[in-house]
Image (cartoon, rainbow, N blue to C red):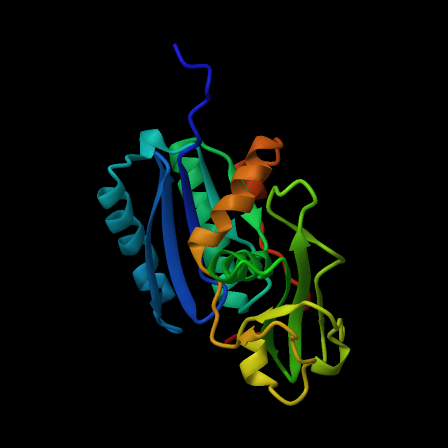
Length: 226
């Protein structure tokens, strides 16, 4: 009999930006659905999840936790992911795990490019940006947030220097005002649900899953509706 513990079956939801995506991680594979429908997240989210679960062969009874993008991002989008996670966790009696939207951006850039130092930037509207700087953990276990995520003017984003890769549509919104990323930049990148899964699995293993009522969004500032 094998002593290896099976990886958890995770559902992931991300709706904090223009993109709407879901992912199902089971049996070592990830099935995802992603769409860019800025005003259609509410209508698309659960049908996409139903499709992905069916393709993965996962039923509600198989799910170990729901991982959701907790923000920062669009106020209504962040609330949608949190409220959907609350409803699913309550219905399925499983814990919720909130993961930063900026972390999802950073994990996505790391997955696609292999970059070890990433600055993730989103357009926060009102002439401001959300940002967070991530680097590979010393033990190779994912990425580590270097300091608190922030919101402020593009000029406040750290200049950094060195071997940084930039990711996120903040770079498209403020191309002349953000510091250049030495290793390149993906200004079209959006956070994806599949990139919530690695940090979500680590958090779940560390006992950071919460009850449905505690699945709350993260706002770095007061409400902005877009």
